Amino acid sequence: MSEPNKLYESDIITLHKAPLIGTLCLECDEGPIEVALNRTAAETLQKALLRFLARES
Image 1: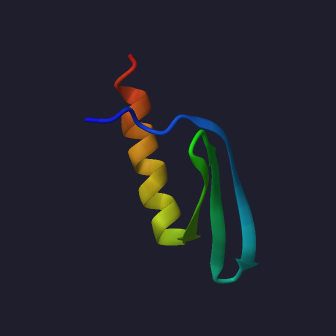
Image 2: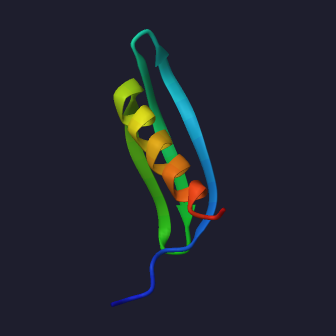
């Protein structure tokens, strides 16, 4: 298995407020990654990140 991309910076650009639409921008060692987000996708990502962070305890 190859080594995963390293994340250097991240940001979210809001494109529309109603409905909530944006772009998740990840700056990685292999180049930028942009992912479209709506409220449902953002909430799913938030839950996944919270589960990940809870494993630290």
